[in-house]
Amino acid sequence: MTGEETTQDELEAQLGTAMEGLQRAVVRLLQEGEVHPHLVVLALARVTGEVGAGAALASEQDPEEMLDELAEVVRRAGREFRKTVRAEALPTAGNA
Image (cartoon, rainbow, N blue to C red; front, top):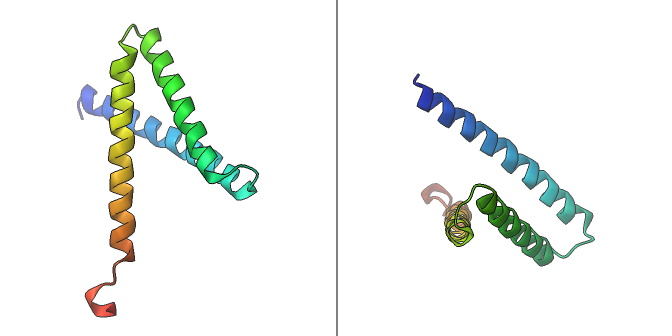
């Protein structure tokens, strides 16, 4: 395994850890029922934008480029999730 592959694996593991932690926090908020689901999503989007812009500024990158990249990641993830949900909802040939 090359150094680049090791770094990629480590980054993917860190991404997975971060996603799991965020998902647990969001699910907890939704299960508690004290915050409307739409507001949870809006809050998560706002925090994502703030953290993204802050990270761009800290690394001397253009915040607009970072925010554009974030928007594309959100769109792609939403579309992939929608396709997955639709595929799971469709009956299979043996169950039709």
